[in-house]
Length: 168
Image: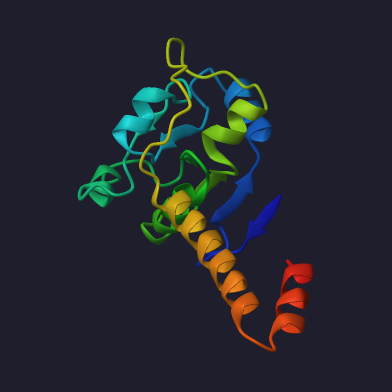
């Protein structure tokens, strides 16, 4: 588990795995539990979300305004589909003054992999939906492969490209 110290010594910023998040949610169902925030797009939220999660789209113009008036001392669990947007949201929430913010590693994809429950009736099909972080990763991988293939075509660079392939 990753633990980082932020601006004040009372802020808690942790990345936790889905099973740890489920444990926090399950233990505290009597009202003291963490507030679960899904920072995915509304489409992703409708397809699949954790029970009682609040959808606060990270890319919404009203993202910051949605947090106005919320208890900054409460415990928050943030997640998205893969975990990238929740990490960004975690850092933003801390800048807004929230004290206890946990980002769920791997998002709903790892949550599903660990066979944890979703909200009843929301077991949407796995299909591609707009996720800028997954698009960025896929683009980076394609560019890396393209550059490696390009090196193979340059005369006299075969030893360099062979070492690049072995290092990957």
